[in-house]
Length: 369
Image (cartoon, rainbow, N blue to C red; front, top):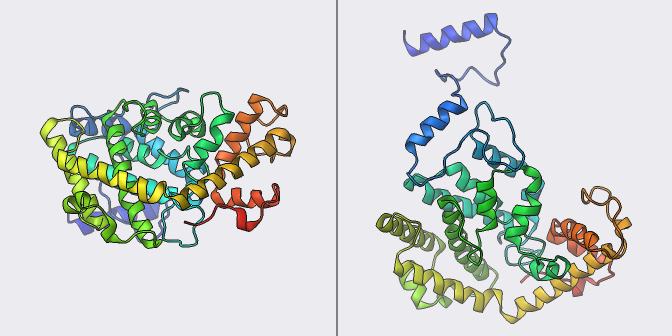
């Protein structure tokens, strides 16, 4: 039977017999939805030998029934995208605190760019794309307002210190009951942490570094801190002065390394350029005197907010934290609960509290570049 006739036949059956509605004229599919088991089997045949397999409901701290159609890491990805911690990354800075220029990266756009790079690497080498994207999108959910300055600000209040990677996996994302492989990738995406347990997590660790060295340089140029020709010759000669050539060079270097070794690695020339790029960014962007001054202000501001609520936990908003009942002023448990609350704030919300509850002047707030 011709395709149009089949479509017309199906349409007549739907209209005459089944209470089904359409946004427009019926869009022909010609197939039924595959079960999760069938999709797992199909994916398993496509993945590389070392890739992470999706099995049932996944390895979770709290056992759940499998989804009829979604794979376990797809459920993680959906939960992350629908979560409040991930949405709040739109209001947290990547480098520049509460910038006036809307084109500068936020922590959310950084995570999206990391995911794009990571999936672009994972796809041709046969890794699990859903797991890769889930780790990449969630990897910075543990960041507080003002970026890495928040780690220094919150550290004294917690017995084990504050590492955004660990905090993100163990505290911020804990209510989502994500798969252990996803949480491991978040917890260990930083190179100062142990190696991730999966190749997908290792790809995200590389993609994170590739993304931030390239786009932080581009943002610094846009902010007037640098010009493209400031980039060291050791970097520009290998990957160029523009983000598009830099991303292409580093991604291809990583894929070449994987092709050569069978492991997640980057060829020497590109790896050396990436290291030189990162060192340059630290010297000229992250640790420059103006940035350090802003970081010191941010640390003082965040500690002031934490101290304020630790001394008066009864002033915490009722829905600020799920452990606000029975908090004792000055207690360690109270400090941990307050850090959980303050770490979730956006930059602008924290700046507003600096004015309204601490009495800071607008001129004293950490702002911009």
